[in-house]
Length: 230
Length: 80
Image (cartoon, rainbow over all chains, first blue to last red; front, side):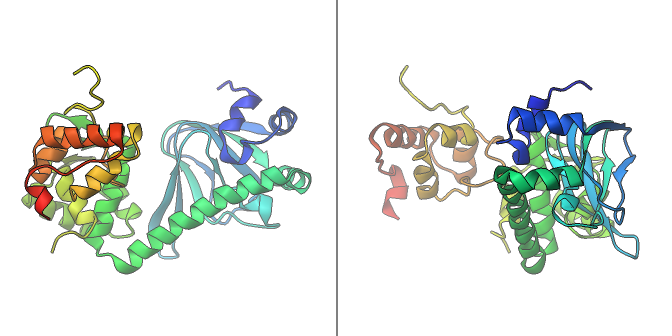
């Protein structure tokens, strides 16, 4: 997977970096390619590297002591992940990073970015931009968890996924995603997702197949997500 | 007709992108479109059908707000 240092400018944290900075980063970093299902790092590993995804797709997931998994976010090309070590010394990764498809990422030493940030305020500032957008997103998800019914949460996740990867067809919108994914992303169980989807099928909002959801009444689903009914 | 900015097959997302003021019409029509995740999937025709109003009147309001920065809701909506 070939890329030029300038490609890194697509990364929020590097949007204002100079050509010299980008050259230095690429020169001192390694490119890692892994296959679908493999991990860039595991929750609890020392956060010695931060990553910039070059190609593929990666999910960040956290596991509780009981083994239940929660998907925190999906990473797309030119997004940074695992950057905690650049800010905090002796940090461990708070989540695991698993490739959803064959993926390539640039592994940058956490200490390198840390040292560069000391003399380049724009790197710190742009990292803060990334962090604050994550915090806002987490606040929104916390609010949803605390205040919304589970049905609403699943509807919102489905809408978010649809906006990102839905395919419009003559009869509605198709979305390729498993019930397990939906459960992890909406912080609920597979059983609850199946129950809610079955209810929505009865109400002609969706048709759920294996690894696939077909939204037959998009507006109806928006009403559920927004709490405009019942 | 060539200077019409909007057509029934235009998506809500594209309509809102082309003209910021269009949001006022969507809100006045009491739709949930502004800020909705699915605007890229719904055409103006879909919106009109979903909420049960005339797509022609809807488009002329959008056209009016784009050109003159003001609009008047047509039909029964006026009586609100």
